[in-house]
Image (cartoon, rainbow, N blue to C red; front, side, top):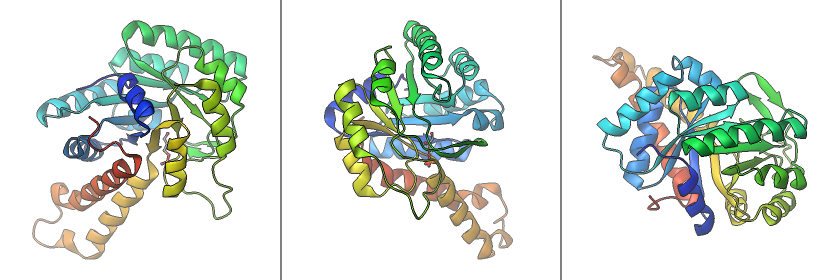
Length: 287
Ligand code: 13P
């Protein structure tokens, strides 16, 4: 079922677990994530960055693929199709194309402008029954060519954005996209606790899930995080398994060059990564 992320995240917040957002890049990714969610009876959020949307031939292509797959694979668990780090225009385009959830990332605007634009999109999403994520305090690292510094959000600004009626709120707490550097200071749990105190039942979102140690993930969930985004880790798992297949010369044996064989180990590696994360996040059996 393609649904808004509201109900699954409200339940996750109340039940002290988190729902994974796994970013998709193509058919193999989408299939691997949906099948794993169904096998584990877990709700799931498929994340699509604007760059990945473009790569997959536009948002309507993505909607068609995801809806078709939910139907053809007999997926019964709740699935949200979510724009990741959307611009104002990108969010509008995804709403139009049939996404069930969008993120408007106005974290790089002055707070007044972030509030204005978020407010406008909240009204549109409410009217259409879509969930909407907003962001305060830019997440560090590189995403689609944009390098963020990894800010720590101001809890009072988080409250201002939460009060606009967003469904879930991403707050920078020292997390970054991609691999973490050796000298990473870790997550700022004091900030997270403060944000949670001010925003109450609002589901909080932790971006940059790749490479955060398990104990920090668990602590973040205990402090109100109910959605965790994972992207790079699936890419690394896919690449490593595909490299192994080719280095073993399997593409040269029989019909090993057939993409259905060539990409099979990589796809299985995505499934294994998603399973591991769902178990860690506590969403197994919660669909
Ligand atoms: P990673 O690529 O670090 O897992 O981050 C994913 C993410 O936060 C997408 O918004």
